[in-house]
Length: 329
Image (cartoon, rainbow, N blue to C red; front, top):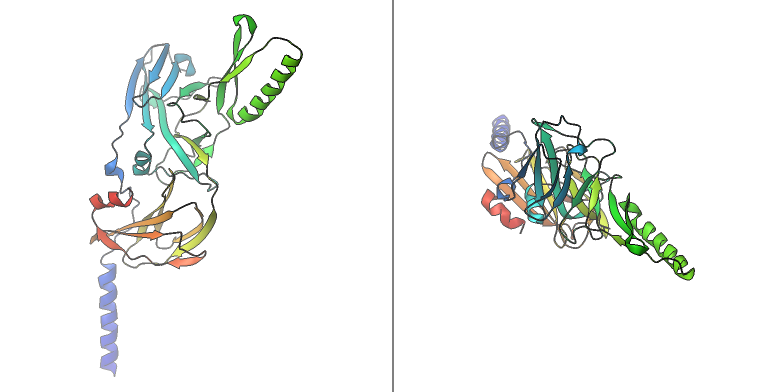
């Protein structure tokens, strides 16, 4: 009997060791990084006082040297990253989720970075940077800024520094330009309509307010990414837990929304496998990627069939990093 007990203990220890020998400490990794094709663009502005800068995908930036507090001889350089292809946003692991865990749908992400002598510049107080994304990108969208300059679990804040230009045309060829907060556009436009009706009744001068809805203005971009997107109303939210898998010390988790330019990503260790209030809109799938000494593994699960507060068991299958791309197409 004692011999049988010792044999059972030995087999158990051997089995456990075989499992744990596969493990390495979990390190968060962007498994899609190698699929990126979009490169940063650099513009040498040197000591120019003014320049209209146009990126290769159509982003237009109105640059004035007086935007920054620099010595007049210091050269200035712009680094511009334009991500209007959702796949490029996904490959860079820039998720579309706010700091309040609200789901966003993106129309594009920008990085606008001005530097001088190797240091990033801040926009001076009272100055505003005017940006024109490609036509139609701002329709029904807001401007969000990243919580911090990070590509690890980045989240977004809607900013109170968004403004838009309006041009007010008066009679006799006279016009004036005004700037108002972009979150007041609807209210302002409704107010303008009332003014127009009142003026028409009084047979006074006619004027027309034209919105340059393809532009926005920012006052703080240092250490920030810029996201052109809108909030998405979820059909429901679910919470679930992934069952611990002793073959992996952690996972990179992606929540992919089939018909939206939206995704959420998590980097989690085995003690952090609970996912609260995940928004569900349309067809949604979870992709889990894990690594151990034997290679790269994945599983793919539809979240539409997952009950709230349920436990999800991953059936990890070995794959190559090259084949991972197909999971996200």
